[in-house]
Length: 188
Image (cartoon, rainbow, N blue to C red; front, side, top):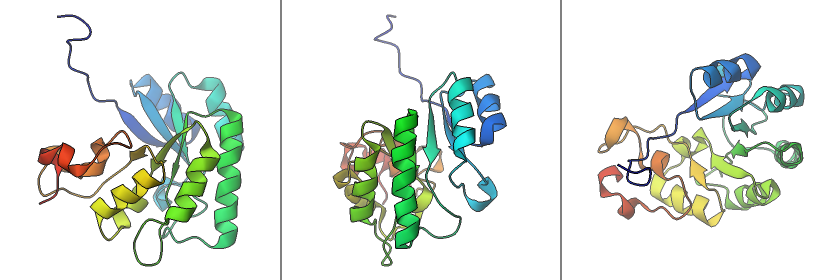
């Protein structure tokens, strides 16, 4: 069997807290890491000292969560401005990607803010974090993220049908994915 005929194994991405978590995940064979602070709060933006040290020590790519606080995903204007500044600074530092998520009060993706954050990320990989799980309609949310140029989505919703008890977005991996492309993963 040639390399191109071999089935592609799934990537192992681990959400970690701080440098020690990144190094442990790396040593355990992770392919990629989501770097956070305070996982007890659902993950918030790590310090830039942590990010700089991670850039020095990491041998695998890592994406940095940009979330100013725990709690909901409805951000004030000041919080949002700090998120934009963080995304721009992370792009300048040269991380592999950012993990973001903003919702509107009606439970939909805040498309204006998500688009602006994705644009500020430039060539970085952009993932929507667990804010997706709080949306009122996952299919509508996925379409919104595609319009916002968000390339990946982390989904922790249990699926009625599908492998591993995960919802459809976890396996999207690219902005061109639609639920009808993978009927096995679609919600009933």
